[in-house]
Image (tube, helix red, strand yellow):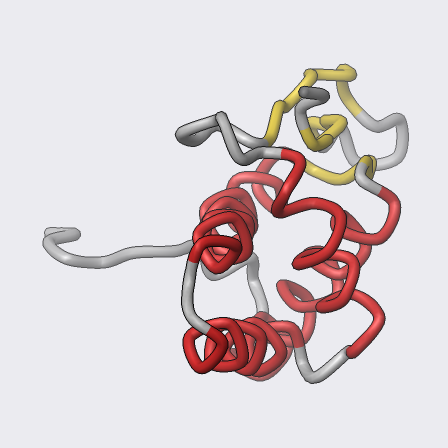
Length: 126
């Protein structure tokens, strides 16, 4: 039974999974579009959306709540200050009027080497 089991293992140990997730999220927020496998895209999609919501909601918050939101995002992203700055100053305000659904997945077909399903994960243009 899979009651209350969340997330994808991705055939990795827990430390490798955390590092992979952080790297993919940083690349998506930096380039706003990445090409990856379907399983990896589904694994990071929810966390990316929650980070964007955190950045979007901090725009109307007090100064203390803004600092706290930036610290929470930095902890989840591995402490990369450039990505946190871009998330809060560029990406968050872009989606002020949108209630969710900040990412989009396009199917690209299978990869030749191992027939893995490849997708294009990108941020929705507003």
